[in-house]
Amino acid sequence: MNEERAIAIMFANLKGGKKKPSNLIEFADACRTLQNKWKGGFKEMSDFFKVSQYMLRQIDKINELDDEVKKLVKAHKLGIDASYQLWRIDAIRRKDAMKIIPYLTTEEIRSFVNLLHKFPKKSVAECKKEFEKNRDKNIHLLVIPLQSEEFKELSNIAKEKKLSIHDFVLKIIKNSIKS
Image (cartoon, rainbow, N blue to C red; front, side, top):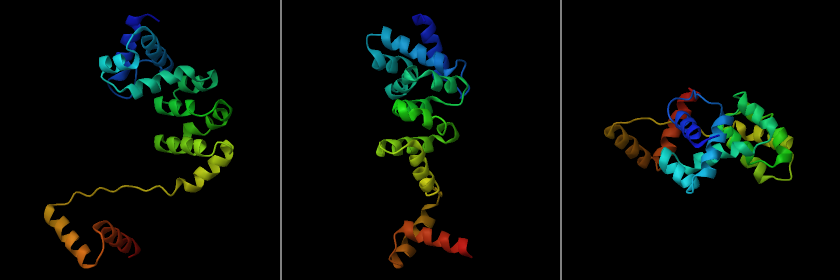
């Protein structure tokens, strides 16, 4: 791939919405082409395209995946982050993991891969069981916009009850769910 084509592919795929004009394999090839041709590598590319070096490294790692994984990438079953996470898994366990990963969210993929790294001696199936056990224990964040007056009132009541505002609000929510 020549440099001009690689630059055009990178620009077309780094900016804009989720739907990209190139497939990820071609995108990764363009990234590798520029990384090899430009003396400054990822740093120069990062400055030129105004994206992080980390993102460019993730895209580039797609080039190092085996053909079986690349088929999933080409079929749009894996995105950049999922592909990168698969790359992080040793080749022996990657084959089993790639059957699971396309059905997980981005956060779940990261958690699952971290679990595989935490237990390198366990099989993918064993790690999947462990992951499933903990999967429903996710903490969900709820952000509630409050006026200053409302926040002060909640803080004062929490102090009176010798609770943190977090614990007090959580208690209110739990009580209202039980009712």
